Image (cartoon, rainbow, N blue to C red):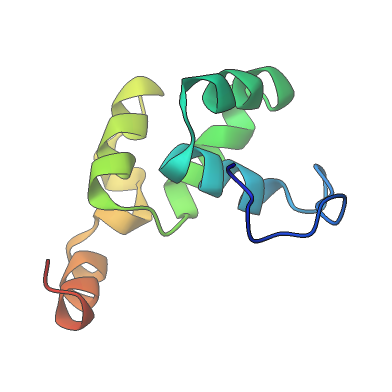
Length: 90
């Protein structure tokens, strides 16, 4: 279950769009991603990829898939990566 830690019915697909997209891109299975792509348009998903705190692996994948220049993805920028590795060096 993708939203195991959230009370059922408490997530609003419009109000919590960023949270839903981020969680699905980071942890979702293929079927979850298919639902996400039907629910939100690519420009909404692109905006989240550009600004969300995603893992490097996830950010690289979605930047490639959505044709986003890596220079436009905040979590792939060197200052962000260096800061994250200071606290989690793995």
